[in-house]
Length: 301
Image 1 (cartoon, one colour):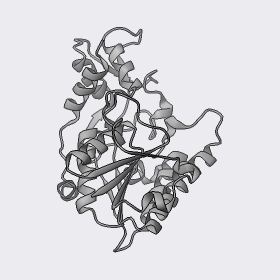
Image 2 (cartoon, helix red, strand yellow):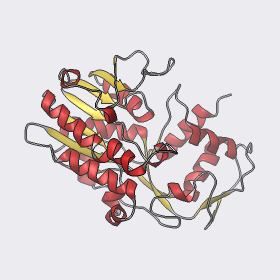
Image 3 (tube, helix red, strand yellow):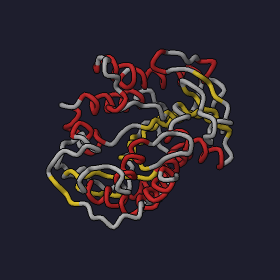
């Protein structure tokens, strides 16, 4: 299968590219700039362009049997001087469905769009949170183009654990430094928690969606429900620290309240449908291994 991965030079897109290439597919990346030298994606063919600016054409997409859209932006990506409404319109609400429509006109047969879990687990958040609303509308707008002959699927994953050589993983680099005692931060986590999933499990789900996904369907995927305390403790354990994290109902410098979409103290927990998990073919119980892998990668001297 000839597959184009939009956002293919990022952490998730890069892992998906490696996974799908290893399965025997012919993989091309689409990104705003080439993959950095030294990354696994640096040797892969790349089409340069920015979907938010309409820089891709039907001719660019026509050679491909399938597209994996892994370029969605979230709250961490809003520039300080940007208008939020305009940003979400370009990157999510309008930008994603418009790109899917372009793929349809180009004759692409399958699109797997990577979304986010919030609006499927806590639908009420879309009424009050602009980011969740944008993700919801991007998801629904993309799948509105689905037909029997044009397979469009959304995978809505939780917080993803992973890193890739050659791409900065600042969050995990900082967490690992803290665990090693290199940062003056008290040993606590904010109240609350969420679902986590390894990037390996996510890429298995992407592969399964390309092969077996039902057109027009949004799949809520995920792995393990953890408190923020338990997740931070995994990082400390992986870094070889004997210190124990406690939970406090207090904002944390490495996980500020602005990044806890449901609100501090809330638990965003769920179990993915077993039948859908089997259909997509992704593994469970892979989070601790993923944390250990990431800490090992970012903690190298």
